[in-house]
Amino acid sequence: MPSALNEVPAAPVLSGPSRKRWTRAECASLDASGLLDQQHLELVEGELIDKMGKNRPHVNALAVMHAWLLRVFGERFVNQEAPIDVSPEDNPSNGPEPDIIVLNRDFLNFRSANPSPQDLHLVVEVADTTLNFDLTVKAALYARAGIAEYWVLDVQGRRLIVHRHPQSGKYATILVYNEQEEVAPLAAPHAMFKAADAFPD
Image (cartoon, rainbow, N blue to C red; front, side):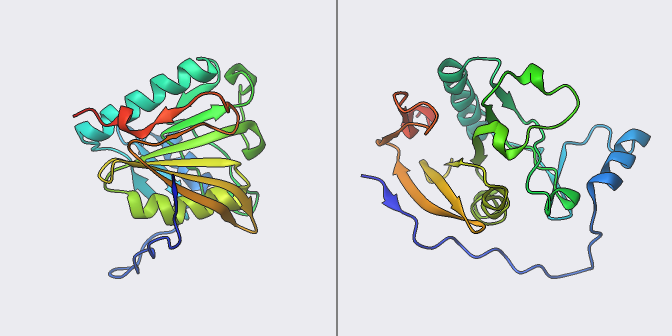
């Protein structure tokens, strides 16, 4: 039986030198100038987050989850590390690139614009060193956007944390599935995923 996640860990207090707050427009300008070449960054709450340096357990878990979602939804509906839009209020300072997104229509429909929250069945983050960030900052960002379902695959904890029913900027339902438990996406209720499958011994 999945357990409820009653308390999300508090986000760390930022200290130290002042930080430059970025907008999507500024990041696009840097990208066009070539200054962001060879870097894999995403913009979250005005900060550029480094998505590089994933270890092997993270890579393996991501590969398993991606392959499973492709089988369930089809290759034209699943993207890896693709940018999405969030709420209109958050868009100017956020350009998240979730590890995996599941679209509710063929990705060829998105020729210039990013998918919006209403275009998404599911957003998945695979968390190793970023668990607290994914459960707090990312979860709040996705909930404010009204993204219907958000999964966090916790590599170190060998569990899956499922967020559903965004309401007033928070997910009303957060359930934790241990590695022997199964859960199905809301958009594919007959397709069961067991967290253990993502963590080969």
